[in-house]
Length: 127
Image (cartoon, rainbow, N blue to C red; front, side, top):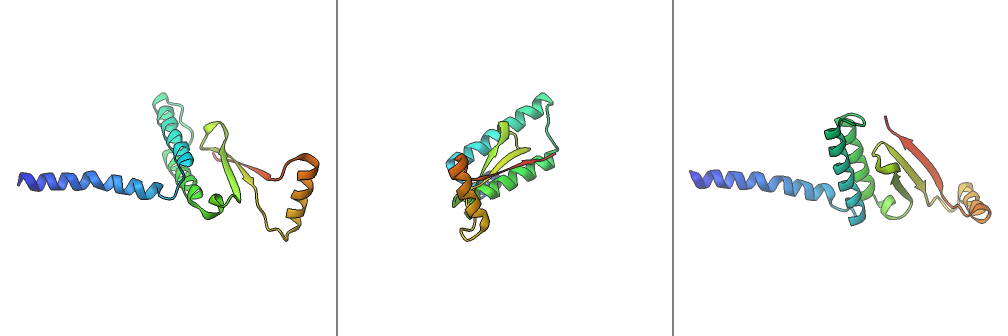
């Protein structure tokens, strides 16, 4: 009976590790480091009582950011995401590539020549 309890315990121990692995699968090391930093900052904020948003909102934004880091468009350099002041609730998104046949692409070429900027910057603030 003791060995059955041990087997049961070992199975429970393995499940979270497998779950975490698939959760982070396909995400680059640099972006994984960002996710870990966010988790650490969020934990510290909760301990200090300086909470931004609800637990559900934080979990959802973490899931969305993880999905973004995994997406082919992100990996292909179509856009980049930067967290303003490491805040999960304030994102700068740079659109880096657009359809080459579009008028927007031509406008971005002109912008690059005139001002040295070749992206569109969007800011998303989550409350």
